[in-house]
Length: 217
Ligand SMILES: [Zn+2]
Image 1 (cartoon, rainbow, N blue to C red):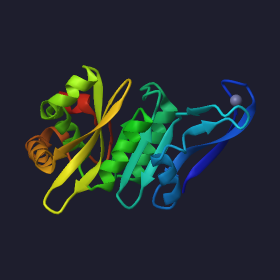
Image 2 (cartoon, helix red, strand yellow):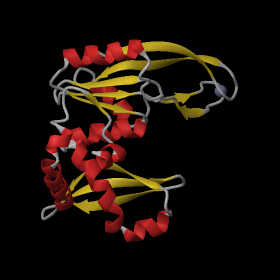
Image 3 (cartoon, rainbow, N blue to C red):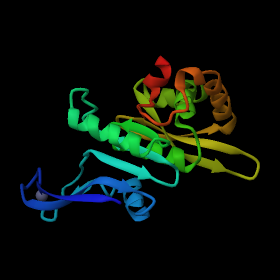
């Protein structure tokens, strides 16, 4: 079940107090419309009723997809190892959903990326392992975006004769789309199989699966 909490927020611009609903838990199986609001980012968007100011409010949110056996915990402030209440919550979820894939992310865009990866039936570890290979597949982009940019998976594109993965390549000022042949993903899943001893099956305990995690393993 999804769990909302209504907060009173003072607009950062005109300081008018108003209500904003934060979702502590979002169950995408029972509340698919909330999932859509999360994906189009209206769920985290605050719009001031007086001055019209719009901004994204990021708060801790536990995303639960029962069908795909997936839980993703958005923790904007990271996970403090000393936080015993949080540790209890994490281990409770582990006990209740032992066979789930459990992931921790720090930003809304990372949360959305994980959801899309599972929706497309892909493995997030293999997708992360692809990312270091992407710049050499897109020399024209690196010229366009400079040196500081990130890749976020955004979907699978299928035409009658080819299948491809689509990434948003985001830098501070702009974002462009990159299409990568599906074969590169298959190559990456092959690499993953050879590293299963390090990775395990990716289920049952909370993991941060990002570029750093994959490079370290
Ligand atoms: Zn305002």
